[in-house]
Each structure stands twice: as C-alpha cells, then as structure tokens.
Image (cartoon, rainbow, N blue to C red):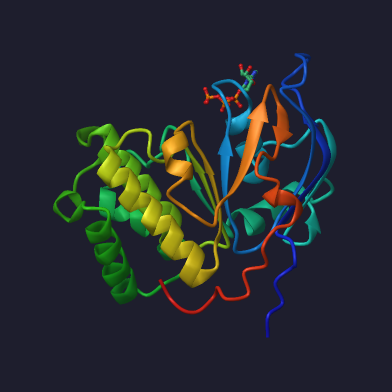
Length: 245
Ligand SMILES: Nc1ncnc2c1ncn2[C@@H]1O[C@H](COP(=O)(O)OP(=O)(O)OP(=O)(O)O)[C@@H](O)[C@H]1O
C-alpha cells in the first residue's frame, strides 16, 4: 500500500529573518511533490542555503506555515525533529564529515544508525564508494582528502540510506564537469528508481539542462519565482518507485 502523502513539502507564506535583520526569505508559498526533481537557483546571497536549512529542519521560519511529510513542522515538538531528519539525506555546502572517521565509516554512518547488518553495510558502502570513484580512498580520513573527494564522500553518505528527500547545497561545486555529471546521474537514479524527491541548489546553469524532467525554482533577493511555470502543474511521477538503486 502506498501511504505516502500527495505532497512532501508545503510552504505557505513563509518568511525568515536572522535576529533583527530584514527578512532574507519572504512570502514563500510552494509545494514539492514526492518523486520530483527540483533545482533551486539564484545569485549568491539570494537565500538558497537559508531555504535549504528550512527544508532540512535546521532552522524554523520567522513566520508562515511549513508542512512536511503531512505534518505541521511549526508546532512539532523539538524532540520529534530527529524522526523527520532521518528521512532526509543532506549534502551540506561545507560537507560536515566526521573528521575522525574514514571515508568508509562516514558513508556507513546512516546505515549503522539504522541498525543495518554489517555484511550489508560493507557491500552497500563498497559499491557506493566505487560509484563515486573513491574505492582507493576508503580508509582515508577527511583531512587528507581533496575538496572534491570530501564532497563525493558527503554525497555518498547522503544517498546511501535511500532517503525520502535528498537536499543538496551546491553538490558539484568542487568537482570537474565529468564528475559533476556523474554525481547528477546518481541523484537521477535515486529519483527515478527509488522515488526520492531531490532538491539541488546550484549556481551552475549548465547543470539545469542535464536533467530533462527537473523543475526550476529561482530565488531573487529572498523571493521565489518559477520561470518554467512547472511548479504550478507539477508532474505526478506515477511511473517512479520501480525498484532498488
Ligand atoms: N546565520 C546567519 N545570520 C545572519 N545572516 C545570515 C545568516 N545566514 C545567511 N545570512 C544572510 O542571508 C542572506 C542569504 O544567505 P544564503 O546563504 O541563504 O544565500 P545563498 O543564496 O545560499 O548564497 P550563496 O550562493 O553565496 O551560498 C545573505 O544576506 C546572508 O548574509
């Protein structure tokens, strides 16, 4: 039985200010649908990271309503947030790898937290490291890795447990164009085969054209526009959720 909500995220008139500063996000009203692939674009300082922080529940809005997974996130008790965060895979702009753990153990974290058997962890993490071209760096700790390598570890960690929603902040900012495309294909595979809703913030306009079915959200000085109009009539990806990654 499919008990997934018909919308995964709903923002209604959301605003965000830091302290007493003017709002950095204003009047955001939009819906994200399960299984869709969204790009969030906008100039530096437009508010992309701030919007992603609201999505990955690191920040509460100053006003407005946010529903995620069918629940009101504004009134949700703080102690229930971890339940919802576990459904999300997040690629942070500054990676946030655990510095004393190897690449392998960083990627394994979400599976081990979920109680996955060690045999399955070894297979899944080895396959994932191979996909992102880091098999030979499995035992390296983050401080000895390049920015691009750390970024790939962060991406592998975010997708390994097949989250319901993947939120990625400039996930290809530190890799060359070939690797950027490969990582995008990984997100697409997760989106197509597992049905993960994907939200990727990027400056890179070339990236947008690489995912034909993607929807574009554009931020300009904290306000959202929808240049393709697609957000108003989001596709219902009934043909997704076909199988494993
Ligand atoms: N913790 C904070 N405290 C105060 N102001 C902040 C904070 N985080 C972000 N801002 C301000 O909010 C605005 C939006 O920043 P944000 O990082 O969300 O934009 P962005 O579009 O992600 O930028 P970039 O592409 O450069 O990462 C900026 O004016 C920034 O200075």
